[in-house]
Image (cartoon, rainbow, N blue to C red; front, side):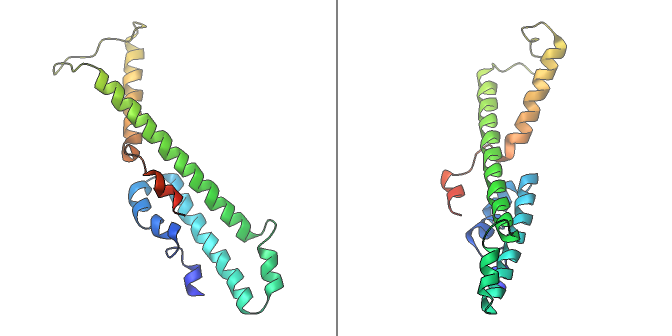
Length: 153
């Protein structure tokens, strides 16, 4: 009974407290996933208690409809999918930014890049700022997850 309530014993829990936490723990969606996963296990424990107490009808009701157990499970799946999409998008942005940076010729130290085609120095500065911000945001996920990492739970 105690194990079913633990959120670190299942495949997802091991990933959350292991490689997933190390790689994505700084992301707000990841924190949300952790809390939702804990809730899921607490609800699962409630159902297991009912089954062990011989209250199978009540337990079966909690396995259907819009019970807290069902809502908790959906929340975990939805957040996990959103996290996967966010990480994939960040990795793609980082690859694009790296490709753009690699395509630009290196400038001598102390030389400013030429203004954007529009001729606006402000536009060029905004473009450079946006590019570096995107790179900083995407950097932790730049390598991207192994495809199989998301399929293990």
